[in-house]
Length: 304
Image (tube, rainbow, N blue to C red):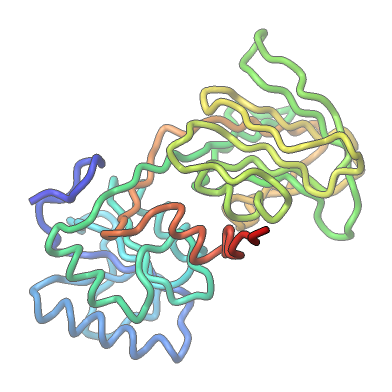
């Protein structure tokens, strides 16, 4: 059995699924009952992430010993991003079922959960490759920098009071690097094509089709009329250096604060070594999702 389409290798059979939950709310109990009933009837075992408030009849994921075939995300895009970080560490595909409002990255709406799981178990799906970014944060005294992974984006931005801060950006590696330039803004977003429809898009960045190998660089509210979004080849390395030591800055990874930046710190972002494999259901396309969830070109053209 193999999924349809040109995609990475998929599990031969789905027999055990790891479940990552949106932070529990009362309206999710019915969804969990449907999920556990559906999987029990088909002989599929469910493990839940250890910190989840899971039903008593379902065991938590054993991070060292579980032989999972797939990770299931129950929630919105934030939950899927958390599931993707776990799945990437263990080389597992991710299926997202949307319990949130938008759920741009998810594959199936909550009302269609059983249909989506049926298609999954029948092998009627494809896996989309999504590359990740990694960020090394170098300080003046760092011998080994902390490394972070993002599926959507890294954001270097001011914390606390809203105010612009000067930043300097370079592209390239070592002696071959070149200055992009310096500007003042609330911060800067470095996004994958997957993340181009998230915060970067809201800040005026380009929408990038997932198969394009690039990094989108988008300034947040730049204090200039000449700073525009930039698309850089994914093979390049981008360095962000704060220029004002008195400004409080922080690095956010996929919407979660990673750490603050000190005086003399610099953030080096490049393509990560890992990929995330997202389950795509029959008939699901990137442009169809854009039309349906972002109302892209939703207004019919006027006739003269």
